[in-house]
Length: 497
Image (cartoon, rainbow, N blue to C red; front, top):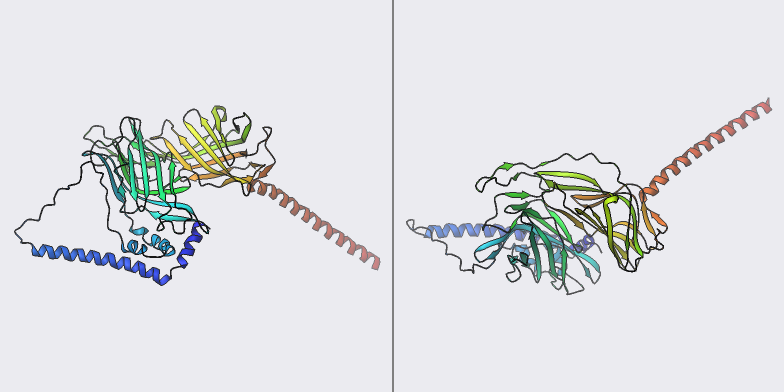
């Protein structure tokens, strides 16, 4: 069952009138709450003597080492969802997506803030139910809180961690690293508890699942704030995590986010250049560079992976072209780069149901392919692609990964072949073009490709000349028949005379 089917099934369990009633309650409740606050404020103000100054807010008694976090009131629809059936909760979750607000999270060491983040996040998690599979889509609630025990500013041997707890046993964690001039998110970890029936109705497991993404491409110059307002989705173990309205900084010199910003490529908006002196900030604008002219078709390379016995277990021949958008000197660069097989090495691993091909070029580009075999249907496909690049003109190292792909599908014991150019979309800022491709990740024998299953584009290209030839043959046949009929009528006329 797909996520869309699951949503339709859940929506059918709640009548349309009930759903509209819930939305009305949420809207009315927010309106009443706002009016009530305004009246209370006016009433309390009228009771105070005009000559008395307003009372001063008492200083917080919280421990200085305690991480702080922002939150806002829960909307009424969120509270109502806890009292509803599992099917109805799914519908209400979508109703309250608009109630989710950005949260502010801080990690402190004593009185000093080392990590601060303002962000919104949502999660798309696929899980098994008694009737198949479905997808849970939930936002990071405004009640999310920093986990004091697991968050840290890091020491000489350990990395800084921002760990956020929410719901019933769920957590989102970001670890950071730096090379002295740049800092970045080194790992994104999501932990979710399948026993939470509010988030995972009808789940057939109660396990606590942890998924990790090694790199998510979030990075900035030290002493600047990373900013990315555009929704950006990262994949970790088949789970999608979407961030938006992000402003964060690690390795902070002060307690507030730096006014100097490093803007992500997706925003494509104005950014502030690093200051030339500690007290001067100059503004520049980020502009998108025109797309480059496509280079010539890449050279075809032969790549292989050997198992522990030294036998080839994966074989590939293909020309590869990287289509990447990245930030460079306050510009968004759209670059098309050919993979040169003469300076590229291959490695990887082969398992019963999983094969990995890793291509490394000149120490600054690594391209990883992940193939998955379905042992039930004996079909395999390309399920994941990951690119890591650190080119000389990049503002920060580039990383893009997607492990929820479905390309190059073929049958076990056969190879997949596509001579036509294919474009494999990975993420919004990265796609891969393939040329004259043939690959076999499973069942390679004698270092040779097995019989190939051709892609649809190749079949279409073969079909066109066949159709044209058949049409021409049909036309010739029609002309010949017409000629014979005309000749026969002419001969019959002579006989009559």
